[in-house]
Image (cartoon, protein in one colour):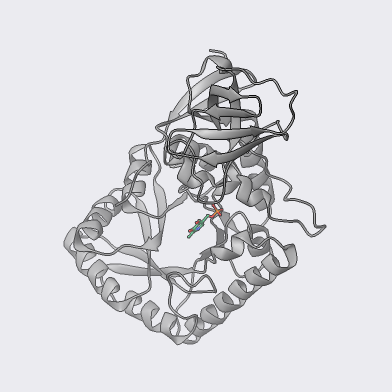
Length: 364
Ligand SMILES: Cc1ncc(COP(=O)(O)O)c(C=O)c1O
């Protein structure tokens, strides 16, 4: 089927670019002693995760138990939940999954360790658990000091659990625009992680894994000498937000290219300088700003409503007719992907495949 025949709104994945992005990450990690465990909160799709694994990734990361279930159903065997899982129902689902696959999880609280241990014993498993430390993101995680050692000792002393290492992820650092400031934020994460690894060693606990890093900082973590694993997600697709990060030269981010687009049709052309597309908030996330119209610098996506997007045409000679189709670059890929059931995978001007987004809407 030709691309122009795709009904809209649709989520387009440019396979040539996607494959280049996956290969670019594989090259960046090759030759280092650091494992690549891409975050699947970006793709929500086991087909994509299996392609990343085929290119050298050791497994996947997820945030939710239900995301882990969707990946496992799609054939992924090694999944790290880079998040705290609380409540008996979710912990039981986690333990049931961990009976069949290699699942690990993060903690930052003693009562949560108890709950995980009780459930692991009930299910007859030994669950690998990492202590999350707060390295500057001010989200989850214990202070990067003795509190981490206390929790690690509790895990190591629990019959149903195994102490598997630490997570040191700084979310806001990924999106710091200045290269130097981003590098400094990553260095701070490495120093905190190194300090905790030292304290653990003094407490005779070995720390097999130090995991963290995303698309914005992974190159620094690869060089840190302390991280054993990186968790970038967005690099496979890119988005407007990541394109705002700068390289050391001050130039826009290089290396990864835009692979994911929302395909939309012009549905109304009321006046000369205005066109309306059929992709509004139900088709594209605006949490990181309005989308960009690909290949048309003179056309601005200037206002969004639930079912409509308004385009302002700054060039009076621009031809845009009812039924014409355009590609929109999302501000933020993860929540945009969450709005669709399928990737429509295109190569050149042809549709090559449909990949189901089976971890879409995985809230639990
Ligand atoms: C714990 C964790 N690791 C890794 C990532 C991946 O980050 P990115 O998509 O920015 O590469 C995220 C994203 O939010 C995350 O929360």
